Length: 316
Image (cartoon, rainbow, N blue to C red; front, side):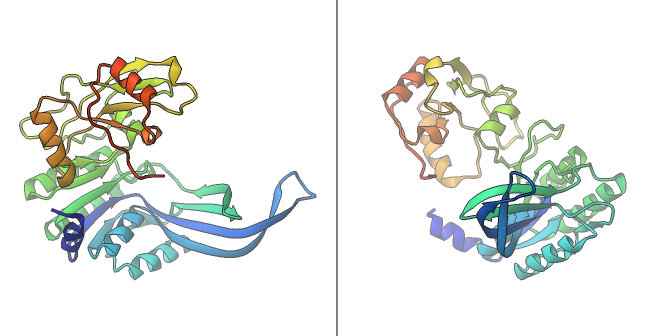
């Protein structure tokens, strides 16, 4: 199935998005002098702009693809809540299940930018966990809504809304209803992801979830016994071996690892199926490998990886 067809099929899909709602604010200006009061730059402000962040950005992306979304999250009782609600309404996002907590600020990240250079960021947030009362309200909202959607997305930014109990409640009811659950996880939490359909950690988060340490001198490659495969689990992950290479110094973070298996990506699934049927291990590398040279290949081979196929992403 080609990408264009996949995108077209997204039109009209309802998505339940559970997670940390954020408002991103940008202050744009110019710097021409240093303050006489302190050794800091003086920004002459030209304009301000706002955009959706966190799980609210997931809602914006859903709308851009032609889908519709229902949000379950929390906002504070401040002016940022009003602006965030207005931006979400422009995306035709259902915010009827969003909880208002008058004792918390709406999570907002403010960035000061001059000549396309970010000078400073300051955050308004309270990352304390939900009260039991609000957690119960969120679980009720999820239970009432999940039967009307085709997919659930949990977007965890460790701002307090996504609790282990909430993750368990979402994945349990979604499993009983046959609704897939996609989770962007935050490592170091006690949440259980065994009923998730797909996890989307970055490379550092994947290592943490696999119980591995990550430092800039480690080349992680190869494969070990599968740690998460169960008869009823739609995904699994393999914790890669690690090899310390002092020669990696100067090349940036040099790392590779066994790619977490998922049934959620059709194009990759087709490729991985062909490779794994041949008894081979699928290995990915971070962006430091975009320019693949003989040194990288040597490091992988020292880690026990036979390099016969390679590719680079286009993230520049």
